[in-house]
Image (cartoon, rainbow over all chains, first blue to last red; front, side):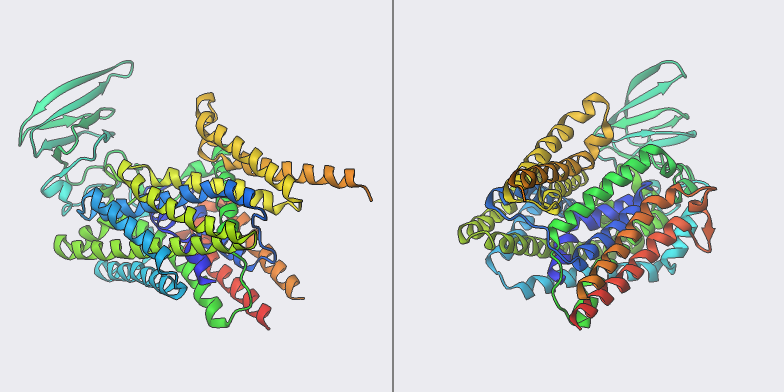
Length: 479
Length: 65
């Protein structure tokens, strides 16, 4: 049972949740609820939803591959921000994904996952103690700030830091930016009607006052310093907006909420099998891991915005977990803390790979021995592909949405409809085709919402197709 | 009986998830109203997992009995 939860609570879910909260995503509160609750729904349900044929299982496997790639990319991002070269991060990810396929003892990987969970929470407790602020006070503090500004001890103010590649900063108040390394700056000025971009060669010590509406882009790796007490450009403007985004009440936001819910819930039904009879300790342990990791990840995001809002400058999904310790504990102790968090993430990844492989293997074993062997071999291939894909710096958030959505569409939705193998397979095929079309082309026809959450349409389509075919078949068979 | 308990727990959990989707639509800015340190939306996000955990544990343990 705990294994099923660890298959759900992979690194991409944990890291993604902390980042959503950190950046003030309007859907962050919903994401916290979904991350904690949908695996519990899957645990307590009565009937399993699983592919009953080798063909249906084969169709569902790409979703699993993309999900593992999302977990791998999230881990690689965390490890890399700790100063580890990308290729080393890819090797570590490969190692932590491959060993669970060779050492199949379930208890080993459940223990690794639980230790990873405890480490994430322990680091959080240390942050709470050092800042001497409980999470709810940190949330209140941020949510009542008039503006999210650079603190006086921020390294962006004291020493300067390197900008992320491709980052462009938009300013909404006059702000003096100082060059800490020689570089080429690209300043875009807008006079209300037209924009002009000026190139400027700067040397160490040069400074420039950006006006409201100006945008600044610098070469990759160029180091800059900002002014203390000024708003962090490119982030949410105020703490009030961060805490309670008004966009939550728009029709588009509600549609996104439904899309996220369909995606998360469907994937959880695929990944987490219903629990058999359990002891009180077993049930409490499994449920606690889901709830603690979800709330813990969200709290990392809250503390990151509380202690270091400037981390939002060019932030990646890994920023809250990988950069907050440095801001709270100082460079030396922070480095050690980030290394520990990186190891915890690798442990969660290994546990997720082990759990996912066991789930697929169990489902395939019910089909045939050949399918079982094939499923395990496929998982091995996915682990290698996921590790290799980390070298391309794919976005873990996008991969996560696609992986979960594909699982919801091709695995869970058709299996939820009562039907013979053929209608289920046809439903899965229709869902997969529609999912691919929406993911690749919906953006081009202005349906960004469907491109972001293809499962919103594809999963119900897969279910409806299966239902319609099953009913038609029942009518044809007659009484 | 066991299946009925599990179904009831599943429905309760699904209801809690649905509440998180619907809450932002609450009128009169209810969702952003502050109750102590947090807004109602964030209270819901923080408390619901704990309630859900109790429901899930109860359903799983009663299943055993």
